[in-house]
Length: 137
Image 1 (cartoon, rainbow, N blue to C red):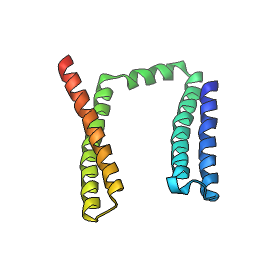
Image 2 (image 1 turned 90 degrees about the horizontal axis):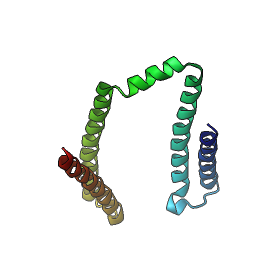
Image 3 (image 1 turned 30 degrees about the horizontal axis):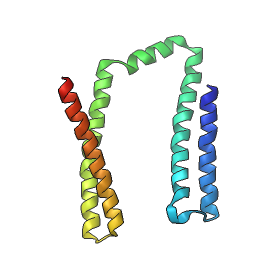
Image 4 (image 1 turned 60 degrees about the vertical axis):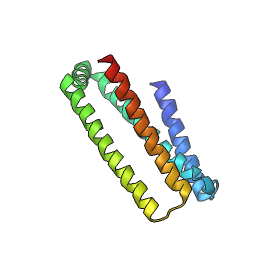
């Protein structure tokens, strides 16, 4: 619990440093304040949820056990995996459309190439796991 509180505080510090940098117009060329704000918010939400869950289950062991059973239920796991797969399909189509739109608008090449690089890394990662899992089964 103490470690989560420290991480929660660290996320707030990241968020506040980002706001400070944005207000003082420091590091704007690199977009660092925006990154710090987004990263701080993401970490804050993650750790706050974990802390609240831990506090809620500290008093009720029966509810904690029921939650663990529900979380590890095979049907729920399959639903979550299918939802991720559908999200991946949508992401693939969206990134492809975005790359095409940027290319047709004659956007700066570094922007288009960075988007293409991210797209290719994601697809290569998916292919790697597909091949690895196919060998295991």
